Length: 521
Image 1 (tube, rainbow, N blue to C red):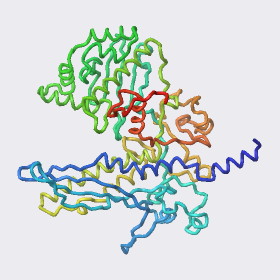
Image 2: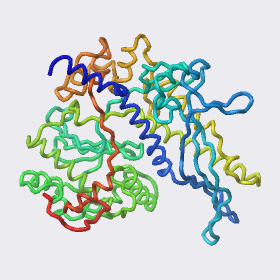
Image 3: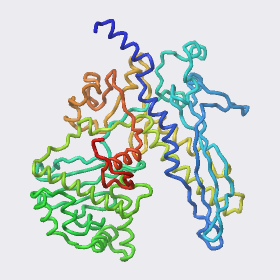
Image 4: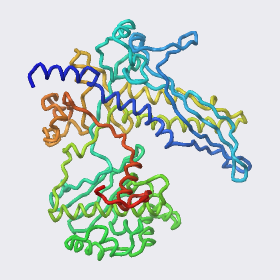
């Protein structure tokens, strides 16, 4: 292939705005599916109305959510289409109204449910990415863009908030819901650790399974101070017999020997005893009934939350959690026996990238929770004053709008992260393209992190080997390679599980095989 052919292919490849394509695809997926998924997770807004005797409970049911294209309300009350250039010149936010179906429902155990008010109401405004599907200039020809004062060569992929152009930085993070085995840095090769960042609906819990210098396994997870004996925890989850616990960890004779040491040191022998012991840890000094209730709540809520499945029995979820912990224990033992190497945190297979749509999903989830708390308060206040309950009077749209616009304007994101949104570098056209394709690591700039800053072999073809800043950000702020394509996580997990079950894979939670088929079909 000669130089002319290569230039023709390159020109054709980048002719369709591919340099900011990952931002567009991610944000469009958020508008099309992500927003509705967050609303479906919330489902209802419960209130305290009905707690007193003689009152019927009242709650709000959430329905479909939709976003229109950007509009601006003028001083005379009229609403006009808003274009990015106008937003820049007038120092306003390029945002679109968000509408949601909401129904106030009243009813008790004896009384049938009664819908007090059902309507679609405006819940706030969503900043819209320039060039996305909901952008008013999407699909415009070169001449139409010039006529409204837009630069036809502008790649888009950023937001206009209060007249400023802000780009959301792609964030690099360790892959969630994946077991990573490594040595504890404090103790060298003596202590082996298997860890997983269990993530579900925006909540992220670090679960650690550690093999101490004594050879005993301990597990630590959020809401429990210190660590818990491995055997105690798996017995609390429903794996009671010694044989079953050993069988689920491994059949290897050397690993079985390690497991027998753990079983000999076990403090409890039954599930009831294990839950009692856990209760004493999580609610010491409380009554026994409260301790048991708290222990059950902790293992259901905070231990491996990603294994929760809609419509799956609680006992089955707990058994799946026990099996997962056994797999983590096996990874620790394999590392101790040098059957496997420690997982490389800098390997790109162990990383995931959060693009604009993922970051906006986190933001929208927090904003919706804030709106739900405000709606609850407004409903309870209106009920105390014996006012008519209606959706339009209890929803204050500025609550959601403020929670969406302020983080993009300042860069201070949910979860205590800063610098997530940045002013677009308009030094020159190449500076804009570079900024749109930049990604940042969550690691601290002040620490050495030599290995994280190094060029890794798995970055070949994905990350540019030369474009990185000098100084403290070196190797932590990187840029995508020119022809990099970012895959989006839009797979139908339930459909994939069903296909695996139909092929004969057993033990998939919530799925039963329709017919057993040979695995090589």
